[in-house]
Image (cartoon, rainbow, N blue to C red; front, side, top):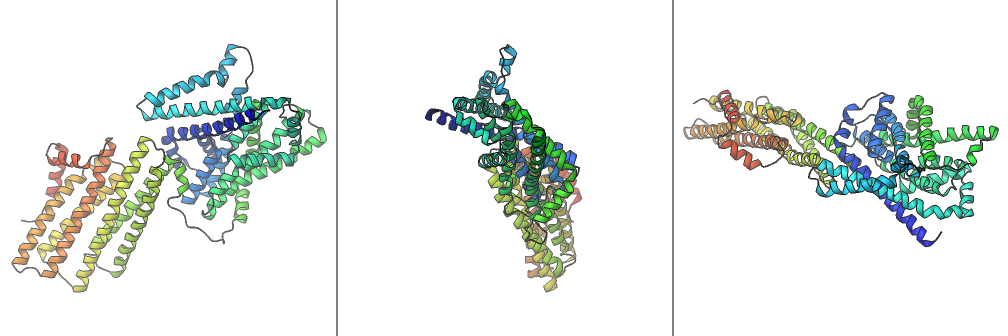
Length: 583
């Protein structure tokens, strides 16, 4: 084996790992909508969790990515630890699909059908289709499919390059002797563990073993412990991802580790004990790529069959390792580990923003209630809720900015933009809630009493603003264009009410029917209420425009105010009649 073979081997490994990464990321992006539905399918049933883990890992072609995702879910409170067990076990089975795909390159035979099944025959065609979709397709989904095909082509080319580079080793006796040494279970497991820990992927490390099998020097006896070790070594990625998480997330990472360690210990103990008694002759025979794929799948199925009935005991073991009395990290509302799966991260961000929206709604209503029944306790609650909304805004902003830097689908990119736009409006509404609460405190402390007319105007305005906040929040949470369409007409009515109420109050001041102190307080209240309605308008218009596939706030509002929308006119008249000030 020359230096050029070594360079080819290094290049082949690099292409193989890069192709696997590109293909996995593109598959994940193309299946974004399906991955989002995972949140609604989580279940306490280990069997359903197992199927879910198999399905997700089959899509993104990485058990490490799935288990890291699970750790993020548990750390964020999206998934219970009990739910994680089945998903992690399923991920180990789902990742074996990669080895079966790679085994196609080892197919031998002279028939046309057999030759067509060899990746060297159809990979160039897939690469041509992939680059054509990438360069000429205008639809994002087709471009994503093109990236998948290109990633697969690079992966298979890397596999073929590795196989060609190591073929000269077939004539090197030392290479055969080296793999004979790996037949020692302890040594083989250590080697497999080291390889998987370095490349941080059991699928990739098994692929490298499949490439080496083309030399004819890899036996069943040496491949078995190496594959067992690779399963344990692949847990390194998950363990690293659990650093700094809460105890249940760390336990989820340990589920992955213990699953593979216990499975490896039991299988190796039983198998090699039986081998000592019956002496399995097939262990000395050479193994090809198909045999490695079969062994990889069989081991994962056996591990699952052995350990799944003892899921509860497995959780008890993780609880002993990470006891409850250790320093606990709080549940992370937005765990950065989720950014590795953008479609899931976007969905989770929306859920957190919905929580923020409901908090803001409750806060503005509580602040308004202080105008009619003031208490220091509720005033402090308004302040605390506003501080919480600030924390929501900071966390969401940081998370979404990081997420926006990832390769997102067009749909996910639009949703990130919408969330960034709306969280600012929600936070500003909460700020105005504090302003209203402070006005209420001033009224209570100074024992100010509005005139009958001013009190009536204030009641109409507060009722209107409570309704517009309900409409804006509901339209956002339910993604309802119909509800959003009712916001702007009501906002126009509130603008008219605000101007009329202020004008009437100035008249009362001039006639001596109101004090200067009351005038300032009343004016501040009207201003804050009107600005709350403005932010509600921003939220609703954003919802409407993004649902229609574009976003141009000023153009939309100009068209409405030009009087060309019959629906707007009808709803406006409805609210004008509902919230009319006395003349």
